Length: 360
Ligand code: ZN
Ligand code: ZN
Ligand code: ZN
Image 1 (cartoon, protein in one colour):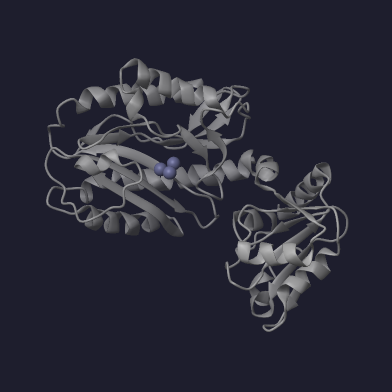
Image 2 (cartoon, rainbow, N blue to C red):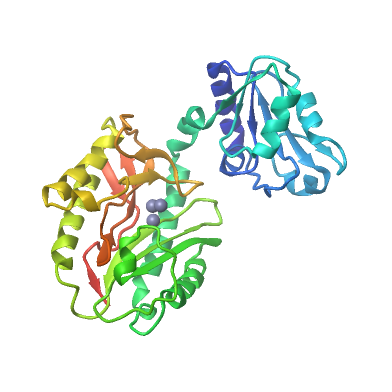
């Protein structure tokens, strides 16, 4: 698989008119070589030239771990100027070189200084098509990730109870995310009561009370490298805060409208508008403070972004979140998030638990 990916990436390097692409540790390197490198102060870098052999530069001590990558390896011992090793491997003094978004400034800036005639280009946008459209095998991995995180949400009644702090509940969930089959827990947001009005709240000491609405947004990375991300909103006890149920009903309809708007050829921003227009029509427009969604794959956040201004048409095989939220500062908040895959006939949800408000 990485072999075909390297071939496609090299085509893209040619199409862009670049002399080469530099890929430092991160999900792009995993995608192209299968090698999950440790990000270090030492340089690890795949040099993918438009012509010639791809070469992975690694610190000598990382060589055994890097052997799994299906490319030529060049290693260097500690004490050697690895920016010179990079310049020698790159073997160009002029022209344009693309670099992945994640390349550390500590490596890029010295390379720029050593090769002042080279034009440097951030490659993220150009590389996006390589990863945005998933293969059947990748969709299968994301489907397993979706089932795994759904399993954790189904167990929420075991942890989310009055008298427990957000941090205690989050610690239990973090263990459950791994128990459900993830290799690691990436994030756990437990935002209760007024804290739920902060979309990226950090779970803290607040003790959950009866009548709280609680936003639970959780995700992890499977052993395959593919990610999960799913939000449900719960109410603790039989009665929700005044006005909350009405607001939640609008949010649920908005989320369904956005899922229903997904189809190949539809601009990404039209999916955002489907949720946003519905929320605005009910008078909550000012309270929906973020985009509707983001692509997901080897990274939790990647292309395509479901946001105003992204007129790019959706393509079958892309996978992304649909996660509108409504946040009333000082009072409460709610969000519903599903990962969907765009199929020729519309969205298929990879998270399949009900989006109805759950009372625990
Ligand atoms: Zn986010
Ligand atoms: Zn998300
Ligand atoms: Zn999320």
